[in-house]
Length: 436
Ligand code: UGA
Image (tube, rainbow, N blue to C red; front, side, top):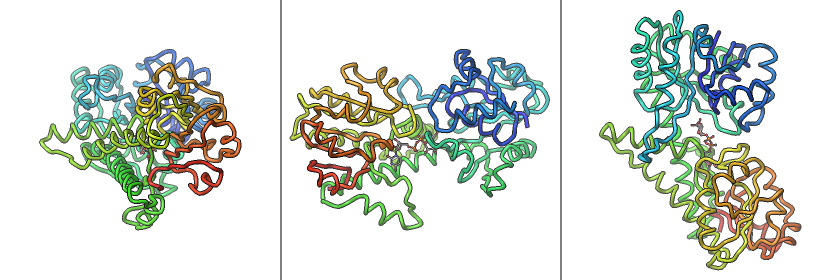
């Protein structure tokens, strides 16, 4: 199968590479020639474990190529996937900005040859695929094509595995021909018996938002339970186990933390609310999940302040982890972007470390932050250490060494990766989230 992927961002690059790994011939197109040049030199513009090896292998074996030449790539494809960005609109109203989607649709339209399925891979509001069809028809009334929606459920940091072993693949199609092509593309997954869920185009578009909103709600729920545990002296980790072992609830996404971040949950929950409003409905649960997430970050600032005796002014705080989750260099909507400036504003000195995120952090966070080579250097002379992101290298710190480097032994574990008793045994004052 010949596939063209428009957009070599996170989703486009991972999806294109994994399709090539399935055995298809994939051309990845991007307007940004710097990005394509980088990829042609074998360099990967994002950090995603395992992606570099897979790109190198499939490029060498001739199934994966990169180009800025849209015309050639589109003409020869049986399926064109649109995987361009859909950021939150600059108007700040929570709507998704679809400029790149419609631009891509206009640009591919003149080059379509023979029958082609145009597949929306980007997360887009309900009705977008139909708009894409309209745009293409306007530019090229002769074009022979169908549109389809095939939302992506992969997680940053675990993207290859999520793609190769998905819980399900959702395809929103309305023609047998488009369905047959999409089923053929995902054929390799049949061996693992991964189910394909066929829906209408609108249902597929909405399914993506519903999945992310549900997961975000689950996180906000457990975060609020953690706050309650803190208030009444219960343990949220045991509580999560106690409810998660109920098959109807499930144990995943019940880890409390400093709030959900990233390029998806914050943006998609807001966009879903707007979709509902436009259609005369209100999603009160999603709204509450968003609100609780904002409150969670503020509560984390207060937790740090309380641990420091009521004021962070003049105190040095070591922050370990800046990205919104481990195994990524992505800082978008990371809780650290809210929590660190709030601490700085009240006069704290921040020493920070992150295995992958420091370059981006330098661009996004105030330049008074001192970035360090490793976690121990960050903790040197600090009054408190805060584990903000659960990178593996922060999970087994040498606490004796850490304590000997710090001014005060205060340990704030915003990801609950440590056993409170073990940290306290080392002479630290310890706080997790919901573990009092
Ligand atoms: C999320 C979804 O999990 C993917 O299925 C989806 O494809 C993707 O968005 C997308 O729409 O593209 P991602 O944003 O990469 O994936 O990261 P997650 O692992 O879902 O984590 C999101 C945030 O929730 C992180 O800040 C993480 O720390 C937080 N989280 C997650 C918790 O605080 N607790 C949990 O139990 C799980």
